[in-house]
Length: 132
Image (cartoon, rainbow, N blue to C red; front, side, top):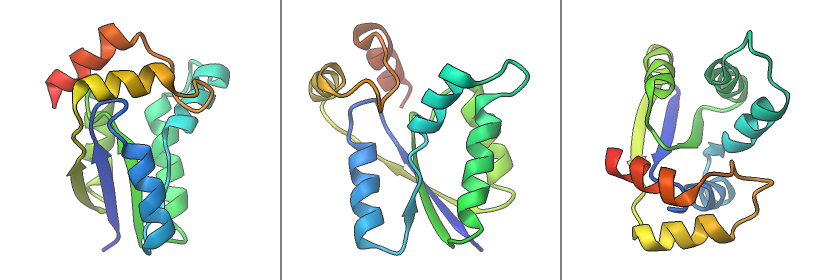
């Protein structure tokens, strides 16, 4: 069975960095989903759900790979629906990524907003972190 690794943690914890390193060093294809969301938020239509688009991309990458890794906050109803759908097709392995929340906040404030979904760090980072 094909395996999907899901890096789960707060924004700024290093999920994308870890996925990029894994992609370079192991036989696991990293699919950063945040750029998919950025494109959806800019160009998406109301008749499509962003989670459906993410799932389509995951399925597409699995066409040529047996092991795929994505990053996620791992929270919300949309993620729960995605997980429910994917677990019927793939073996799911969650990897919890932890980092000091003050460090996460610093990273979120200082990173390139063109490759990451911009958020109000104070309001959303802390709320998301408490869900983990």
